[in-house]
Length: 119
Image (tube, rainbow, N blue to C red; front, side, top):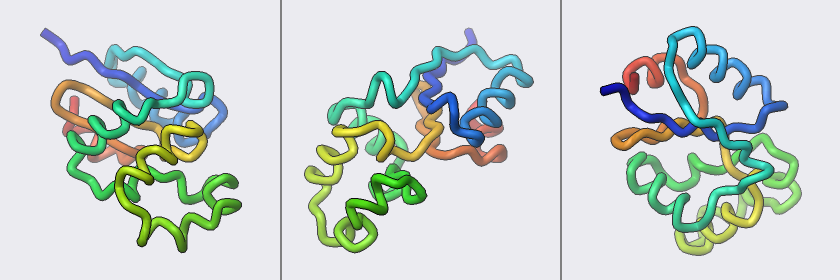
């Protein structure tokens, strides 16, 4: 039985487009979700963060305009995790993308080698 993947992306993002091409080129079936139209909930983010075993800051889109306008670079180091999760849930554009989710993996950002191991 093949894995089920949820591919969370912003279709205008070039990195997301590269990741989607990679999925298609490798024949990987996935359900696509536009992060701007259907932003992740706080519960989803908490589940993905836990499953990913990554530091929570890795879920922030540090190159985004919203991240910069909110001066999060300075605020995140002292912000409690629950506040960071709540903040991420307010706007999909704050969340780093793409995110690839399966039952046993959560990959944030597109690094081909990491994605290869999740197939």
